[in-house]
Image 1: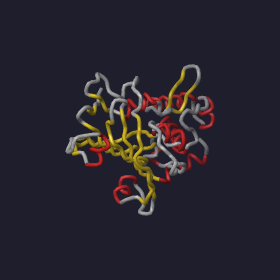
Image 2 (image 1 turned 120 degrees about the vertical axis):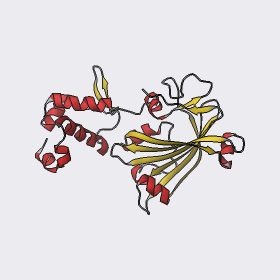
Image 3 (image 1 turned 60 degrees about the vertical axis):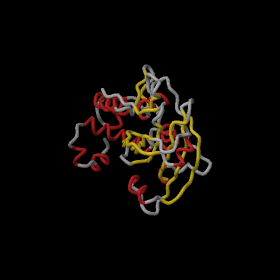
Length: 254
């Protein structure tokens, strides 16, 4: 590493193994957007020479990042920043299953649910939005509402709240694609590293009953999801109200 990098290292980082420090230096480049999803990384030799470490140290750092799903090794081609491909992102973050299906909608062969937009507004963050997203009282957010269908019927109503400061290209004409994590990465250099979800049973509000064609008072599954970027910041607060008469939430632990 350069003298400047060494002098700015914290004691905590200095106490870590060398490969872990190299890994953090490379993750910092992902956070800064220097390497966007789909970008091919320089060779191990080039990275090792730049950072002043051995190729073995770089290889171990890259192996760790690959295991975390941040990088993808392509035989004969090189190492690339992972993209939020349709199948992998479904498998990681989408676990709704039709009752009459033997496999989850998150299975590799599945496709993303269709989206029908209900509203899109920009406004000052509410106190709850400030709390969840770590915003100040004057900060702005985008609020999207949409209904999602699995090609058979509407299965959920969804609200997404995004900080305006993290998504500068979004405007009144923007419609989020079905694969929003791919959009976050490709358009804004924001890589979603993990999500946190809270589930609870609720009664369908009147507007959701109408949107999904449910009976009044129908039970639903509420999924409160926070998408967390590599820098540790929550970049998306999503609330999904899922019908429970034909759909259930499926999770497989290994």
